[in-house]
Length: 300
Ligand SMILES: [Zn+2]
Image (tube, rainbow, N blue to C red; front, top):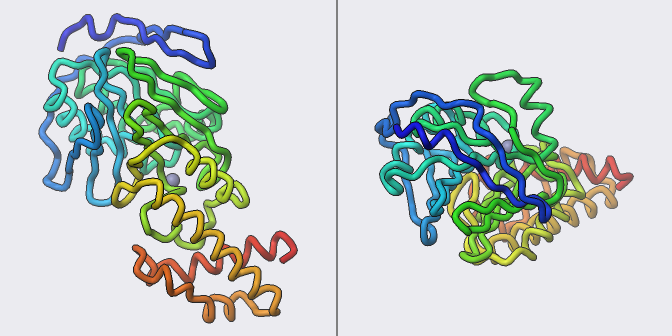
């Protein structure tokens, strides 16, 4: 590893201001570890934009002329495999930054392994609300961010803008959407998916923020969206998610208005038009229950 990778400045344009972060030191990593297993796959989504996935989780990294911006490292093992893929497709490029989509452990773990494998320290960027839970967790695999933001931050590495948008509370209160405006590629995790149910009984979801987040996401200028689970989507995928949560809310509201109990609503609401979506059999009834609880919490 070249020592000078660690002694450099990270220019970050934040709300029109350019700041520089200093390196906190340099890990003596080996770099280029082989993937831990055969479950990983890397796909080029656009020029220098790569989706990286294991059997259940998907993340993204972006190659610029001034280093690689990596999103969720997923886990220490996945991060080592991701580092090997970064070294393969962008040999000699340093790690420029790590960006957490949100603070949940199954996405925000692994940054130390990524840095060690690539032999460089890099700033970790996240939404401001992610800092406290990560600090409280005190897990060495999930270091808190070095740089946080509120509504929007644009990273500039090698003249390639990477916009980070906060669309409000949804699946977490710190979910970050990335947008590469020049490539019309976005990245979003857990609050949106491609033709897939919401997670279980939606207990982690914040309504009405979830509705608002999806609407704001649909207004961003992208053609392809890399998603934290499942296949990549497009603008139509997001529109279908909007329709799904609207239909689910309307059905739950109707059930509450008709005096149905939660069990009766769960047994009778079907929304067959979504029956071919991923996890319908496992999670749809739970989605109904979660939405029913939210509707009743709002007074029906
Ligand atoms: Zn999550």
